[in-house]
Length: 423
Length: 161
Image 1 (cartoon, rainbow over the protein chains, first blue to last red):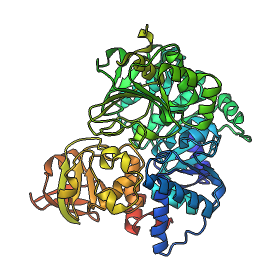
Image 2: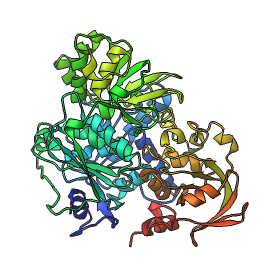
Image 3: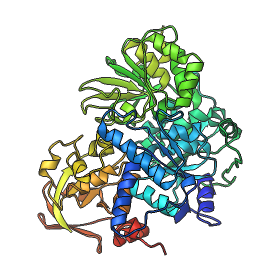
């Protein structure tokens, strides 16, 4: 069995599972945020009317809650959702609620790794499509809707069809100017936004061994944009060290068998990778930066679960150090812990000196929610994950998806820029 | 199940156009319905009628896990979406929450059904009858678990064996 099959076999009390088997898997961890939480509360209200008991969760200690999409609240509906969420966690005895303005908080997927909330080998579901991110820690991590999350919260399990696995093998270490974001954009460009549909996308090879945990998180994060059920990397010592440094213990590294089967294997050579962007209006619409259209950008956005981890900010700072931005540029660290490290290590000063606006952790403009959304006809380069029509604001705005290096280089020139071509 | 077809002849209709991100804070189902398809077809809410179907290409509902998407469509009156393929979270949200039927069709059926056609969907025989054109097409049968959840009326009413 491969790693996903092993995790799902364990979670469904079977010796073996194969692709297409339908199982009910025990869930180890579950997450809701300020969009899916109120959605789940609404489902609970409906269930109550149907006479279903929703008085108790199956295990509040396995649940954690993030405030990320509409925080800090810009208007009263968002503010009311935060109050609802607060009452929900209080009523159900959920202790792990990361509240903004009260210490550590941030984007749910970022907290999953920054706070070591999910461990290798676990089955983790979240009320958000980018839950796939956390598969980089060697967990089966998968996004679900409100009804499914409500079911998990009450029953501790959910049905899955065991997915086939597509294996992406990366040979060699990525060059300095190329980031994991460029690789995953290249992959999505190759296989399309349904190229991973209903399947697992697993990443391996010497290039992945060489890669930091945070870069692997970027890869798994955007498996969602290829339609994948989940993304995963077999955990190694780097994952153990990463999680241990964040307070985790009792880490067991689950790996696939040597005779594990994959539906298809794709190979990529690191030396052939180039800085890449996805043009509007699809993440599969990729092109290497040096061939990208010569458009005048209005904005550069460095944020989100995809592109505002510490490593992402470090990459942007490397470019922005001693330079000035030519277009509106926002940096929104994805969690307070990252914000703090960026402050302690001088990154915030580099950003502010360059003219950047540094904002609080939030999903913000990535999903067109608030804080820097785009006006009609505005063009943005962004370290986020989607560029569908209207994704970041007006339906006639445009978003180019890129790595933090490219977003920072483009902030300096006002054009889509390969970091190697900066003076 | 009988109704008229609203056809969007394109692939990858994503959740950001089905219900734009700015509305994710809203959990009133009727208010969500008033913004359904706003990112693609601002006139959708004026032309949709109770019992209508949407017909579209491949990868319908790609993008986010927002259950707002099937909710906005179903509370607009949409009873089923017929598409060449579906994104996985939209598909399971539609079924598990019993909002609407996601029906997979083949290319031929996709081409032959036109905007405004009146069709009848029969999930017991896996057949779609085009009343307007007097044609019959196959639909892809639901997998066993999906069929059982639909029959039960959603995940919460489904009793695993």
